[in-house]
Length: 263
Image: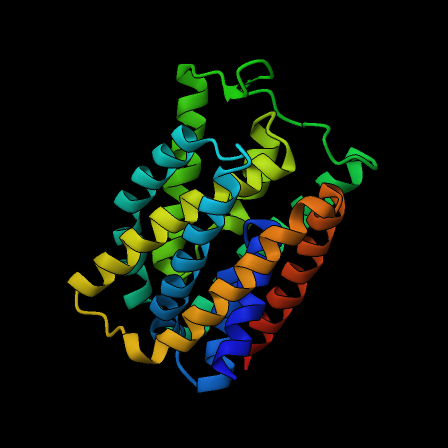
């Protein structure tokens, strides 16, 4: 069962560049009766491994904007201890409600963006980070660097607070603020998730969080299998459909977490 749940998490992560940890945390909480603070490091470990594999597979297709991912992950790793500190001091019910609210807001925004884009899903709402179609790279300015650093900072804080890789925030943020295609945003998100998640797990271990690695291994294995399948399927599906499907999934998970928190 742990392997099957991991496959589901990896598949969603591979298709959307996000969503792995937002599924992993609730699944571990429901299946193993763990509190969010215990489920979070295991979810991050599995998501980091799957995202690293996804980054490698996307790198061969030249989708990954590695400079942007590196900047976001460095800043995110620096802000993740703030999230870990906040998570230790907030009640479990409050964490679940915070999780649900943030997820719901991101889902609604992502769904509205996808409905505005039309059939191809490649119309961009943001011009803060320009994209050079000739070189295939982002155009770096102080503004674009600041925007990407801000995305990384919030991602790291959410990673520490809720045990999420942050892809549910990175993908819509990149689509809103840059001219990247959906596939490039997904690939860049995967690299950011891999680096930020690994950094957060390492910090969690340093500050004394219990990380049962042996318990996590079947879940990690399943997430790797799911990731391989998801990256194979992703280029074959329209970007706008992936975005809409992911947004609806996020809304369902947000509703479930809200009910859990209220209960």
